[in-house]
Length: 257
Image (cartoon, rainbow, N blue to C red):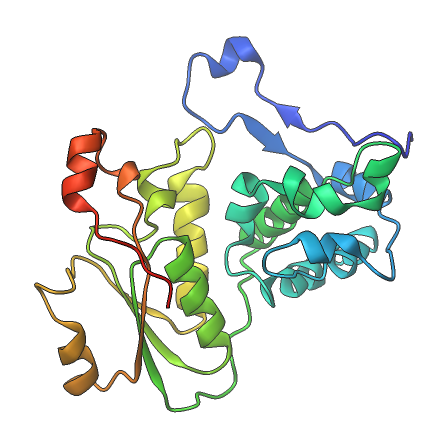
């Protein structure tokens, strides 16, 4: 084993993937994941965590992979991330966690994203979901939009005991994950739908075909339905409308609050 080099990841051969829209990257199997995990130095002052937007305890979950404790690895990731199978595929790890990896100074960084993907895929194939909270805190929060930000917000709030409902204007939840990223990069039924179900497993309710402002207003949510706070996910209309003119007519100014 060359510790300076990543374990290569398997992909569909070009002549095969040219004939289908299935996922190109096949990911690690168990043996490959465990071999790649051995490259992690388990740094005490882990820079990779600082590079992760949600601060996953990366050395901890990789250590569980080394020990073949894949369920523990998944639960470690799930404490910080509601969408590990998605993030393991489409997050820009090369400029985030892997960009901070100490291994990368003299060789290849550890393939953190591929290990996250392996762990999430293993959990899905073994019917393992994130752990729901033991108790509710009695507070209701509405989340408008079921894209990555909405799902993440809802999942994090649910873990803290909030009663969360997501309102989605379109027919399927997922936002840009469902409508904007091609199948060969991010499978919809196998990956996105399963991640949405994991958010539901935390106790989050999802209502589709609800256009806020038409079906129901924010004032009605708070005054009549008892929601105490509302998180509004600004949608990415580029995933739905192609022309600049249609995007301009559909978009609203975005503000930071």
